Length: 266
Image 1 (tube, rainbow, N blue to C red):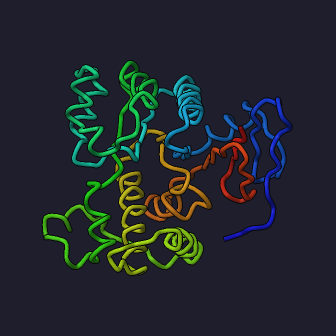
Image 2 (image 1 turned 90 degrees about the vertical axis):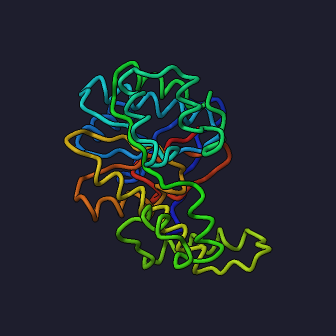
């Protein structure tokens, strides 16, 4: 993982900055949007609990929709078993309370729905296609604790057809995360890493399979899009569709310049 060129934060009181990794300099909103128009997939990372990050995601979605309404929004927050419910939501056929109940939002994702409400209401009001990217949330912990070989045949049916555990930079990142945990159940790193790669590859598979003729804006945690070794490159290998990544930094963070195509500084 590259650790050299870091992005400097804007001075206190300055407006949020957009940094282009291609130039290493600030880019304007219009410059970034002109570039995003040239690709099929736009990944916008987030810190899940940041209202500002979700507001920026919606701003990008609105801007791209205004340019071309033929688009989809793919979300880490839903697993693929809920696609029929998401289709009903996009068609305007569900009220919010029923949508939350039928997607089991607070059992599966658990973060405050209010953080995502404006995005999902925009999807509903415009009938933008909403795409579930994930696999059932109970499967990765089972892989982490006991390997994939001990999943039931039914559970194995949710796994991606290909899982890539050979990406050195991604493995290094996972080792850092693994070292931060104090597992009490004897979790092995290779099982932990396989679970992480299954997670990345199933979402990449979803993007590639469900992109269709639209542009897709993908909403996922920053860790899934940073340095492109999570979802972005895995999806690109499957589809060949060009993409851009946007990493949203948190206050006090000094991200590596190569972490994404665009870095949004608070």
